[in-house]
Length: 221
Image 1 (cartoon, rainbow, N blue to C red):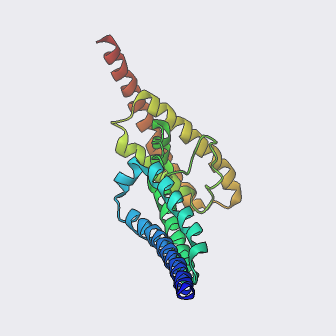
Image 2 (cartoon, helix red, strand yellow):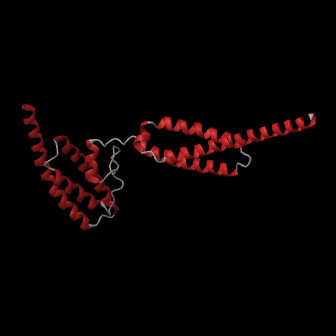
Image 3 (cartoon, rainbow, N blue to C red):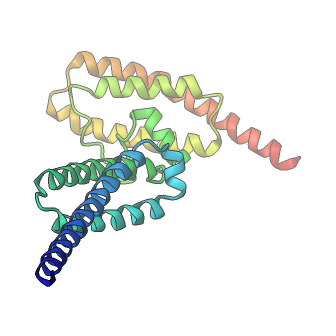
């Protein structure tokens, strides 16, 4: 009888160990699945909501990621779980990179002076360095053309300060022309540029005076 009880006792102990082991693996698998599900759920949240609580979302991701990695040790065959974890990790990093772009603060608007330069020459062509090296014998006529036509289209909107900036840019472009003439500027383009310069000169003089006069009137009010 004692021998039977001993055998049964050993069997129960073995069964208990097996049960505990199965439960441990089950819990480990749940942690892996919870991590994968968390990554998928984050991707379904709107960017606006994520932005408001991104630090908490990212901290929770780190916690679940660590739990999932630790759980691999409790899985008898963890190759499938490892593959799921790695796939979710890649998915989350890609998503995080996307969000870093969305969450980045908007670039500051260019200053009024830079906006004027962008309109006269094209966005980003002329910055604070006043570098006109991109203007060459092949494109200088079109540069003058855009400059003069832009001034003509906006002459009634420019303030006195705007006209001062226009003059500064015009003189810088003229200076570049002196260099470009030695690099093979055609006589035809030179003639067309001369016509644009004749058009610009009186337009600048009249409207610059008009802008100053308007400012004087406003100052007296």
